[in-house]
Image 1 (cartoon, rainbow, N blue to C red):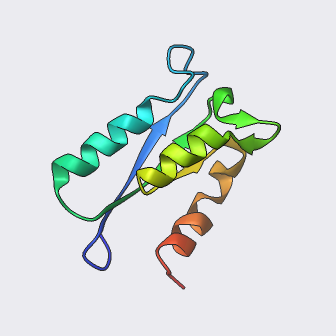
Image 2: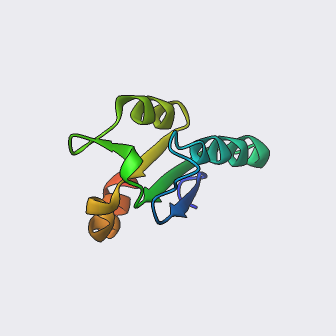
Image 3: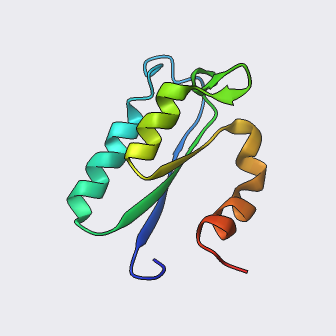
Length: 91
């Protein structure tokens, strides 16, 4: 928690063959509703279905923005600490 907001990280690995549309993001939304608090989340995934031409697919990006979630694809996992610090304004 920080500044009266709850932050959580959802991690999904492998190719997610059964979840090519990344419906796992809806699970993040359900968790946010159930907590009833300001919830911000990070969704880490190694699924190749997140990317299109090296960028997060627009449909995934839009869904994540609606859920106040930052998608972190496999090539950015190594930068997780810096991403969290930036998102939470930690110096």
